[in-house]
Image (cartoon, rainbow, N blue to C red; front, side, top):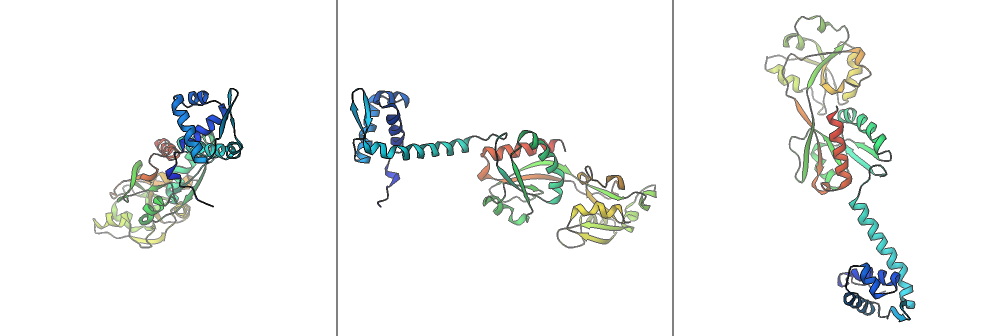
Length: 305
C-alpha cells in the first residue's frame, strides 16, 4: 500500500470535505466555514485531485456524494472527531469530572503533612482524581520530572536542576520532643550542656550519626550520644513517647500525631537554621492546565498548614 505524505496535504481540505458532505451545498459549506464561495469551490477542486474522484455532483439543488465520497466519509469524520477531542482534552481541565492520576515525589514527612489536607479538599471538589506518592533521590529528581515519572516533587531543593521551576510552600524548623515526665523537663533552664547529656535519636537518610543538632552543639564544644538513628521519620514519635530518648524533629510533624498526648515539646537550647519546603516541577508542564490546577491546590492547602 502506498503511504500518503501528509506533509504535502492541506488537512483543512478534510474539514471542507466534512462540511460539503453534511451541507450538500458549496454555498452552505462556505458559510459554515466562514469562507467565500470561490474559496470553497477551490477546496472542492483540490479534493477532487486528491481523491481522484468527483466526490460531489450537482443533482437538482444539492451536491450529492459519489460512491467514493460515501466510502471515505465515515473515516474522515472519525479522524476529525478524534482530533477535536484531543485538542479539547489538552485545552480544558475540569477537576470535578477528571479521572487524572497525579504522581508526586515526596518524603514520608511531606506526605504526612500535606496529603491529608489535600485529599480532604479533593474529596469535595475533585472526587475522581487519584494520587500516587513515590520516594525519590534528590540527585535524580530532574530526570524523574523530565521523563514524566513524577508530576512534581515536594521537599527542600537547595540547588534545583535545570529546566525546573521551584515554588516555596511553607517554612519549617526544628523543635525538641520527649516523653511526658522526661527528666529534661525538670530543668528550670535547658542549657546546651544539659541537652547534650541526654540520649538522642536522629532521623537521617545518609546512614550517619551527624545532623544539624551536632553542628549546633559543636559551637559549644559539645557532643551528644546518638543512641538511635533511623531513616524513618514517622517512627520517632512512637519511640520517643516510650523511652528516655529525645529528638529534634520538624515542628509540623507533631500537629496531627496520635502520639501528641504522650509527648512534650520543648524549645531547643541551640540555634538551628529554618528551611523552606517547596514544590518543584518541570518547565515541560508549566502551561499544562491539569498541572496548574494541582500546583494551585497545593499552594492553597499549604496556606492552611
